Image 1 (cartoon, rainbow, N blue to C red):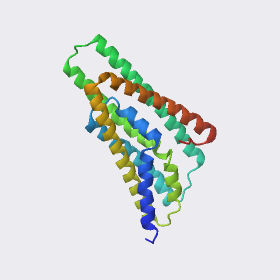
Image 2 (cartoon, helix red, strand yellow):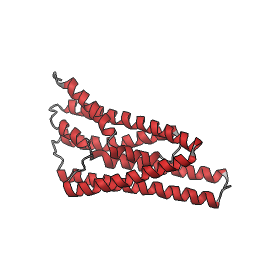
Image 3 (cartoon, helix red, strand yellow):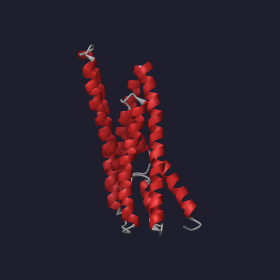
Image 4 (cartoon, rainbow, N blue to C red):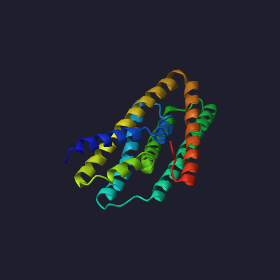
Length: 227
């Protein structure tokens, strides 16, 4: 531990918080939780996204600080393209769920509660899997690349591991906070102004698809999406 250690750890926390609010992360989680309609579940999904993200960051971070492996630009490019495609798919899923919900309501307006409970339970696991996969896939995109560059300058293995841990704490704090905020907004709209809720879902889906297309094209052409 030297005089610069506290500064490095502060940088790790700030990078983690900033990384959590990368536009692709925010829109990905928004698409995942936009039809959950429950603040607690939104918090859980934000935590699960952070877990998936942490798994990727820890694995890659250990490669960087222990084995001194440099992450090639083309690997980061692949992750960026995959993250862009993921956003497109998540947006399409939201639009599909909206159409399915509308069709189901028109066909079975008085369907029994047991059926609804079964669908909700299936959807819970479905959203959890999406959230975990999304977090893991987005682990090398955006400002995580900056974190890896900073991490490569840390000489101490212990300090490097602490750096990763604090970075992941920052990411988790940011995503859980965002999950709580958007969960509260969506719970209010679905309870009080259903039409606005559906508009929010459509806008969220379209933003996801649009940003996904932008990230995919720019990462393919230039190697990285500048957000």
